[in-house]
View 1 (spheres, rainbow, N blue to C red):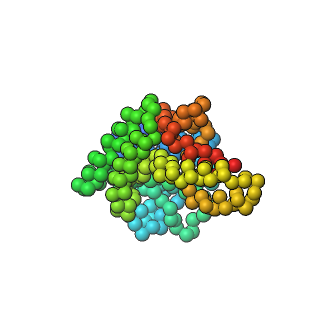
View 2 (cartoon, rainbow, N blue to C red):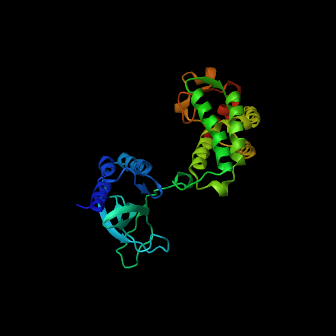
View 3 (cartoon, rainbow, N blue to C red):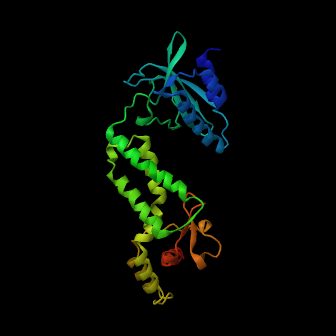
Length: 286
């Protein structure tokens, strides 16, 4: 069995351990290290196995028709039982694999099958050839302390106001990063997720006064009167939906208004100064 045959076999079986043995330690794949290639592949396998897909049920040979450096390279499309597909093209030299590429466009004569592509993403700043610019270094150097500070908050109770002031600094830095320039960079992708995961805090804080007024107005109207209810809903329809997951609320929530962080249960947020926001959310949900 050639290395290519072994590679195809162990990808189809989702066997990372055997793939690690087949690939040379000093191999550069897709301009990233072998370890990073396997790490990304394993993430795909884990996601599929969580959906009870333990192997690729079908393998089809493919030949690239792209006008890039992969033109006419041969490869394989690995297809799951639920029609998801992962495609790799193999560059060979003396029957040895010297590189692997993503593939998506194939020769027209090939047997086509409608599938949903599985994205194998390599970010610009993950590539071995990437040379960080001064701006890149500046951004990543300023971002890293925020991750460390978030880690330090684990296992603690923190007032929402204090967390909100910290998050505003995070958001200020994020808004300074040019989206179009760094959209295909891993540091920006990770930081964007970090910003979004904490955005709910700012939503609660910024809408606090309006939710307080909305609750006050609600208590003054005749809730059996459909017209009054409609007017109230229209008046406050633009208030954003706050994070209101009951599973994140601690026991006796309405006594202390403590909630778990959206993505990190060990961070407890004291929302006692924002109880109207949660009361408004309950009313609107009804």
